[in-house]
Amino acid sequence: MSEKAKIITEVKENKLFCKFEIIDNSIIWKKAEVELCIKCLVDDSRAIDDDKNIFIKEFTIESYSNEFEVDLKKYWYYTYYWSNISIELSVEVKIDDAIFFDTIITEKIENEIGSKPKVLNNAREIIDPKDNFNLLENLKAIPHSAKIFVILFSIIGAIVIALNMLLWIHDQVVVESQTFFYSHYDSDWNSNSPFFNALMTSGWIGAAIWFAIKIQLRKYMSFFFKNISFDWKKDKLYNLSDIIWWKSRVDLKDIELRIVACNIENWQYERWSWTDTRTVSFREPIRALEIYKKKFDFIASWEDISYYLKDKISFEKMYRILYPKQMTSSTHWVDIHWEVQLIHNKLIDQELIWNANKFNNQYFFEW
Image (cartoon, rainbow, N blue to C red):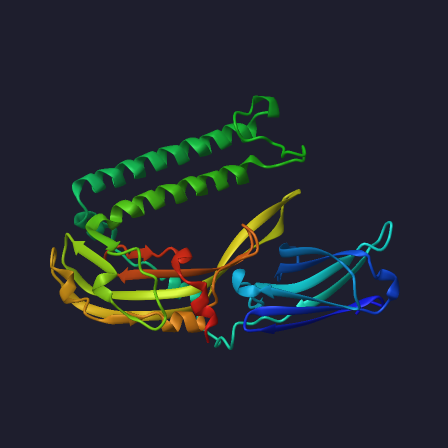
């Protein structure tokens, strides 16, 4: 508390009630500004934190007690404390009462979303299970056009990576003035080995080629959302057959259908890269849960899948356990991930990812 004033805050029914009380008479009739600030704090030794103001109001201090009300439902912001980031809300009042250093009074706000239960599991394994598949069997299952693409992508990728490594060998042994692509120095003219830059480039090329190949290997079947306009109410049951659909070119044996969801923390930190620092963006799935899971021993090719999708699912568990999406900035936020997985032991797994922006934030608060 400042010697000149104090802030008293209270949150009721998602409304922030803020009382600004004067202690020192000298600030009466001074100009002031009240701000509602959200801060994302990263748990790391070289963290990059972030913050933004979501409400600003200028006023003149006319009395000993000044009151403000902010409807938090308009913003859907909340305090959050988990594994890698914490999100804090605070009220800050700046009083224009000095030439150089104005008086600033800050008060933290506790606005938690009910009593969200703890979830103890390996979220990454649930959201991204290990994909066991037989490449030869998968190639047999996809159409001829997809096979040609896989072969072409593999050949092109091998050639590009080979040329990239030859380029590295050349640039490694020649003087700086004769290099083609990989310099011996970084942007600050500090000594830098071309090998690690070439290795990183090859890794990016390999990852891009493999991503393109996976798209082709999934073409042994069509797998899609039937309806993308659901509002996913928390107190309603939905027919699984109204949500997803697939048609397979081959018989499917011992497959498992899963619907999973989780929160994802997004943040940044700094790391040393030889003689320079670099900013690293990170995403970590947390609080994962299974909404639905069912195994099928056998489904014949081209068979009408509606016979197997007779169950109903509810989103109550997701809204009760997970946190809603909350943006501090484009680099720091809590996200929601919701996907349908079709797990196969011999063919590459299928997945459908729902747009998290379609979920209604209000449902997450109603517990």
